[in-house]
Image (cartoon, rainbow, N blue to C red; front, side):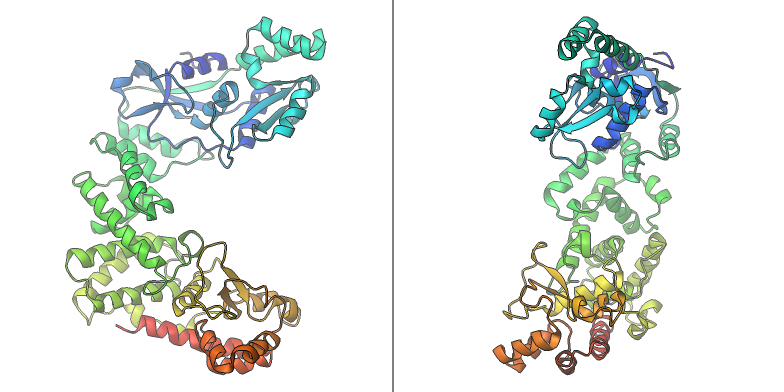
Length: 537
C-alpha cells in the first residue's frame, strides 16, 4: 500500500481483514463526540495525524497475535498490514461508514452519524456532522426529516445512487452535486502512514507503542506484556478473562495490579521496568497464586466485621494500591505457614498505620517493596517492629479533613463501619447497599453555616454514615437527639452513638449544639480506636 492511501481503500482493506491490529491493543474506547470530531476533520480536509503500520506480511508470520478492527465480520486475511498506531481513528471511520451494532464508550446503544449538506455548503464544519443514538427515536426522526441531512455512510454509495437519493430528498440538483463532491473528497481523503519494517524485533515494536501518540489512549503495562508473553505461549488476555469469571477483585482493579503483585511476590519492587522485564518462567503458576491472594486481600478490605470496613472498593478504599502489598503479605504468610492470629494483628497494624500515616500517597512501588521486606522480617521476629509502626503517632494526624477523597477521611469512615454504625432511629445495623448509605452531617450545614466555615462543618469529625436522614434532615442535634432520648431512652441512644465512634460524654455537646466541643471529644475517641488497631500486636 502507498504511504498516502485514500480513505476508501483503507476502509475496503479493513473490511477484507487485510488491515488488522495487535491483540494486545486496547479495545475501541472513543465516545460519540470524539468520533464526530474526527469526521469533521476528514470532511473539512484537516490533518488527522500519522498512522503507523507494520509492512505487509503473512498473518502467520506476525510476531504476536492479531485481530480485526472491531465490527469487521470477515476473518483475517492471509496477508496483513498491522496497525501500531491509529486504531481509534480507523475504527471510528469504519464505525461511521458501516454502522456496526455496538455502543460507543459510555453509551448503551449504537450511534448513527449524519452530515448536513447546508452546513457543508456554508463551510460550517463544526456543525456539519451530527451524532444520534438509535435509542433517541425523537431526535432521529427530526434529523432524518431534514431534506439536506444524509447519513455519513451514504457518501460511500455508488455516485448514481447518491445523486438520486439527494435529488429526491431536496429537489435540488445543486445539493445532489454537492453531495457527490463531498463523497469524492471523503473517499479520496489522503491518510499519512509511516511503515515499520516487518523484520524489526518485537522489543522495538513494543518500544514504539510507548513512544508514539502520547496524546492518544496510552497502553498499560498489561497491554504491552500481552505482546511480550505471547511469544512464550502465555495468553495474558485469556488468563484475565478467566479470572473475571471467578474473582470479585477483577471487577474493580486492572490486570496491571496482578502483574505488580507477582513482581512483589518474587521479591522485586513492582515498578514499570520490573513488570515489563518479568520472567515468563512459572508465570501462570504465579499468576494463579497472585489472583488467589488478591481475592483474599479484597475480601479482607471489604469485610465489615473483622476486616478493614471498606464500604466499596471503587469509592471508599483509602489507597487502592495498598491491595498489592496486602495480597503479597497474605501470600507470604500462607506459603510459610505463618498465618497466626499474632501475625494477622501485625498485618492490621501495617494497614492502619499506613492509612492514617498517608504512607501510600506517593512512590507507592518503592514503599510497597520496603513494607513487604520489613513485614516479612517482623512476621518471623517479634522484635523487628517496622520503624513506621513504632513511630506512628495517631495524635499527629489531621482529622479535620473535609474531603471524601482523603485517605484519612475514608479511613475514619471504615472505622465507623467496623464499630457497627447502627441506625439512629431503628437501632438496627445498616444495610450496606451503595444506594442506601448516606454520609451525613451530625451538625447540619443548613443550621451551622456561616457560623462555621463549610470546611469546618464538612470535617469527618462531624460526619457519619446512616441509612436515611429523612427524620434528621435540617434538625439541630439538640432537637434530633433530644427527641430520640424521649422516645427510646438515654441509655439506648448512648449505645447507638458509640457505634458511630461518638463517646458518651459527647452527648452533652450534641444536646447543647456545641460543635467545637463535640469534635474534640469525638477526635479523642477516634484516636483511641486507631491506637487499639495499630498497637494490639
